[in-house]
Image 1 (cartoon, rainbow, N blue to C red):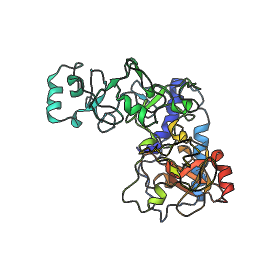
Image 2: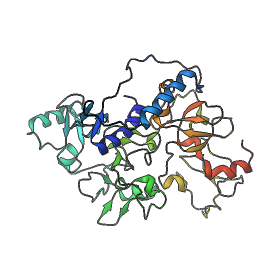
Image 3: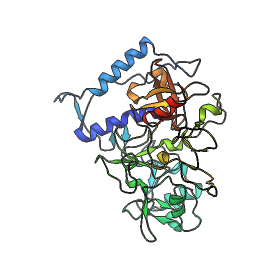
Image 4: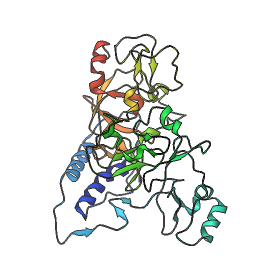
Length: 388
């Protein structure tokens, strides 16, 4: 199942959980032929129009209750996602009954027996069912979820049943985890707050929704399930586990070129003037040191703007400005997975990328956080520089 299909069924999972019943739906053929595209831009055609129309109708209409064509919710699945945890090594769900083993230690991670070393696999078979612990839990040495190192003092999250461990410095130094609440004795990791809701005020967050959180298996990012908070580009693995778009890695042999992988503006986001600028490592934002009240002695190895530090990511159906190579900045809509034509979905893309549709030309493209800025934030700046 592709990442786009996983994100689509996330919306279905929320509906099924709320209604506690599902209706039989026709499935699309799995062996659909792949469409070859000669360029990165694909124009909308009549076949795609029909796809958009049918998708919109299918997902927006609420199924009618019927005593003849409904099935009870399965005990191990929500929509197309299993309730179990995925393997922490390969990030996949169980392939057959009994091949996924859960650690009964503090980490509570799950492992495919095939993903364990030979020694660990033999140890798992020798232990009685329900008492096996992974090597980290047996040794009492857990790696930090951010830097993946167990050197130094690693602190466990104090929330019950949370098996995440962190270096205090890893949560503080980068500035990317303002949602964390910690002191010398207690730590509440960022995985227990919706980062989209908390982005307005991470230190005093207000949760706008009460739906369950889906949490990234690679970092302490979390969102409310559904379409309102989950960032575009998120890949859902299970009913509660995701890979967030913060883990986008530009392809090393990309034919698109480095200018498409990440761009930074030649003007300051605050004063709209050019000059000596410090650039954000995640988005196109650039600033003067004076505008940020930074002294000349402050030279961070990696700089993140306030927008990226707050955890705010693009959401579905938002309008953004997109910059591709030498083309002008152009407005585009972040597409919901149900509105993406099949031939666009089959285009090659990386984890963390999401599809957009340019306004006016109606062309499609797969992009990521390094190529776009908020529509409202940069409208005045773009007008000032005549970047249209």
